[in-house]
Length: 113
Length: 115
Image (cartoon, rainbow over all chains, first blue to last red; front, side, top):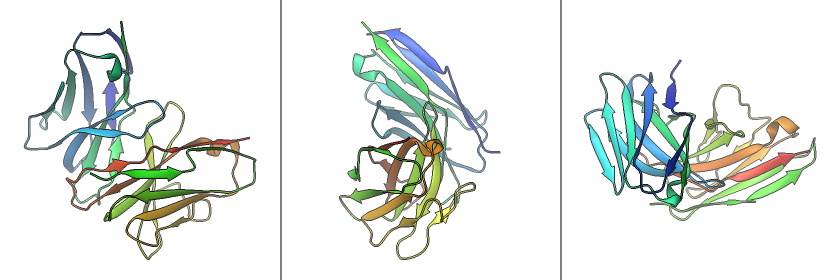
């Protein structure tokens, strides 16, 4: 069964601090890995997309890394802001999967003053 | 990018009734999808909405319960039929312009509560 597992399940950090979210996947054959941010009551919004040949991708204060050999990815958030409070979802796409995505259960991040 | 809107944004329905959710994209897209997100859970794909033909359903989802239409390249509907409290969930529409690497855009979701 193709799975995407994320850790931690939830995280609380102080504003201005950095944090790293983890994603392990068993999806095969792998096409690309995406990180989405989902604010409460909203649809997911894409942060980064990486193919198996890419090791890192940045989008502002968000930096995603990918190790296709170990099937691990991380999302690093720098200088967190209150608006970063959201669910962060790791999503993997299958090769030839017709754009079907396998979603992780997400990490719920809360940034506090 | 593509901007996706959904109607209604939320609804409270009685057991045994049906609700149709509309999804409108601001530009032509190749593929449209419907997802369900149960409380505290991640997204589960219900079906791929195919233009001009029957939707392709994932395991565990059937056309009689979740009939889907896609009359053109920018619009789709999902009906939740004969609802029960177990259908209480957020239903999201998404769209992509084609190639596997292309970004998949999501609507804001429809929050459904069945009493």
